[in-house]
Figure 1 (tube, rainbow, N blue to C red):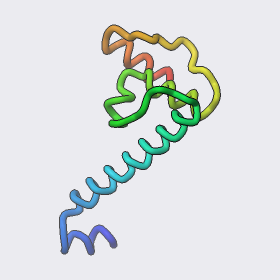
Figure 2 (cartoon, rainbow, N blue to C red):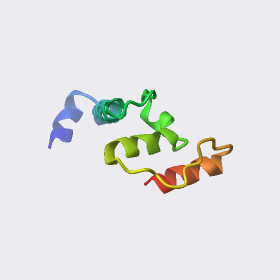
Figure 3 (cartoon, helix red, strand yellow):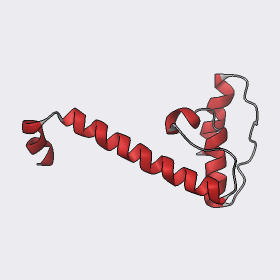
Figure 4 (cartoon, rainbow, N blue to C red):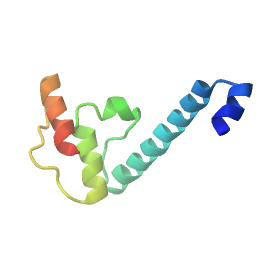
Length: 90
């Protein structure tokens, strides 16, 4: 119903874009909160770009759960190694 009401006044895609940005900001703030609590020097600025290689994602997971992510490659050299990091962090 909300989508139907909004579609008369503006684009549903515009509303979805706004919601997506809001969610990204919420998750970015959440991740940075835990990174700060874990005394990490790193910060998330762009959630999708910063977590692409898996290193910052693993650091966030470790900060939230207090468990170490096993078999972490600290210096991935190619896209395949980055993808393995992200998949093993899930």
